[in-house]
Length: 454
Image (cartoon, rainbow, N blue to C red):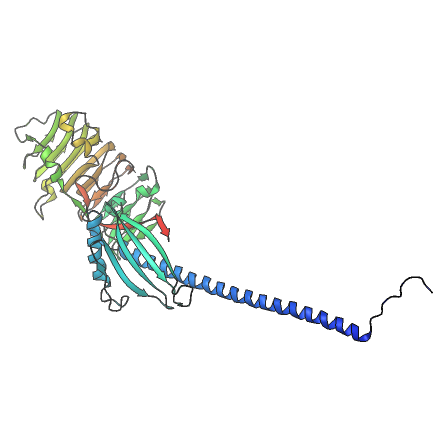
């Protein structure tokens, strides 16, 4: 027999006890796992629900932002208002558009002087949003939208998300185009139209009906845009941008009275116009001056109506030429400014540093402001430092140069450019409204870099 203790033998009943104990342990483990998995499943379901509700709230906020942005950007406000004035005007406009509408269901837009409040607007699916608009600076407003999800069983009650963005006056309007014409634009052969810094500087707009824009041949950097639904475009030129239509009609406004006080030297039929330098002059009505060669104009030239002004060769203008607005219906035959050859225009900001030009040097940006007048160029302008605005504009052959501003045609007679014109538009020097010319109304534009979430 072997030495040592005999091995212990577990009986049948003992083996059953061990198996039962093991089964109980496994059952306990599985029960715990089942509880854990059930809890995890519940947490996942709740997390998924919360995520969906948060998404609904965010969707409501973003939808409200889009809705309010459309309303604000499509509202015209009086030009020149400050932030508080813009808030008041916008409140009146929004109340007029929303009060009594199905969107508000009997509620009203209110303003307490500091905040415009747009009440709850319901969305399909049960979500909603409210909006507030406040002053964000001298020239800016801030829109804040609170979006609310439809679900009310989210933690803490109804879940919401908040987004906001600032608005300030746009630089568009007539100044958003290199060429703006209320009437038709007719351009003959070999037209070159370029943006100095960006193709968009060389956009072309006409508000005329019928054949609004006709260009025989050439090249255009920017867009070609019409306003009237039935307007047509005949373009033989290569267009770098789009040929399209807009439903926004700019409304440029000219006020030459800001320059009138500076025109202190009277010239009339007794003045010698054969040559020399003319500084801050006022041309009496009916003078019809014919300037000789090599004339220089400094500061302001104010033209009373009626007058037909003729410049011969080699004109140097450092300043601005403006006119008194003629009586309604006055003929262009009695109201015109004509340049024969070789014109160069420097801005008011380039006048000599002299006490008589102290204020004028701060008023740069306009070159010609001629409401009710025909402005006609013949050949060879090199630089025009400022915006050109006239009732009608005609430019004849071989016109080539840079315009630091916009070309604005105020009347239904439109713009006519003859053969071989090369115009480059550079709006980097003077932006938007300048002394003497602006928009009668303006629109607010969302500045999306200011977008934020709370």
